Image (cartoon, rainbow, N blue to C red; front, top):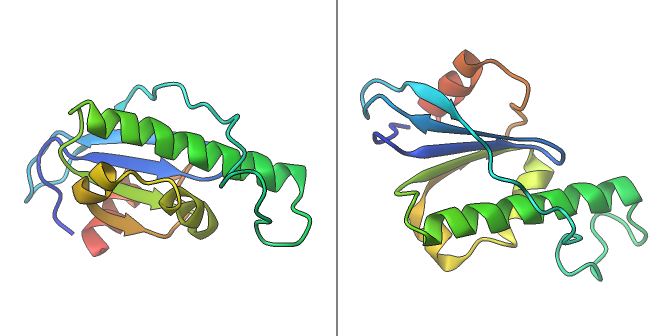
Length: 134
């Protein structure tokens, strides 16, 4: 996948979010780490009434779902404020599924791609390689 200049890359799992911006161009990806805005993880997933992966989801799973919902809310705000022209989301598969439930239509329109991998804690080189391979 080629990433336009200034596109954002969000790398998330159920507990951590890293944000990057492509400071290169579409032909030469160069990700630069950005400061991550505060994520409100008090929203317990998709409404708090739906069982996630079982009839009685654990507190840790609800916390992870709440964090994913908070990440989506923060990204929605960034997109709707006009800060994001293009976005790639890289997230653990389960986290990505929870994020999708909370995408605003404006975010969906700016979404350049999704990569279902857990790359939090990985090097910038690993993240760039995953984007290039997508």
